[in-house]
Image (cartoon, rainbow, N blue to C red; front, top):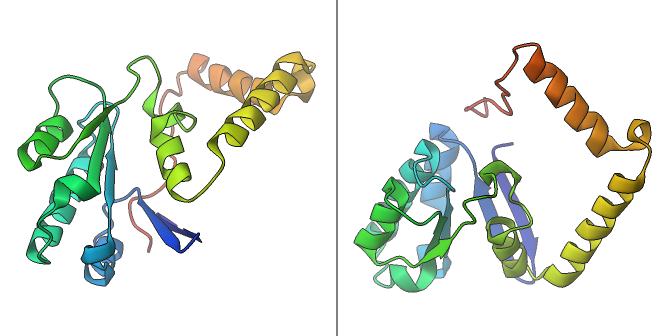
Length: 174
């Protein structure tokens, strides 16, 4: 699914990672805008899906009567000129700096992943301790027993064979 929903501590987290018209339209009509907060994440600030979703959600919130968007929204992006940064500035939405040295798709243990996790009530310190332990185990395991090493080796082999594009998902739930 491209719309992921999780519930915890009386809160609901919806993650959208597609522009699928049916999914997005359904969400827009179902949101309780008076109780909704928004977090827009794009390392580059130019990710088309993120910017398009942000534009649509901001307009839908405005039409629903939301007048305090800066208090209920944030954007995570690298510092500098970008479409997301300009959109955030235009609407008074606070920006949180994304580490420019950390790949956006690999930033789950950065603010991009930890802020939503904290919103859902997860113990961030425990999560990071567990990740560190997993990394230590992976680094000290024989290569043939390390899923991380095997995955990295497969990725390098694919790149060396000229396969440099990875497709993670389709852009439609149908």
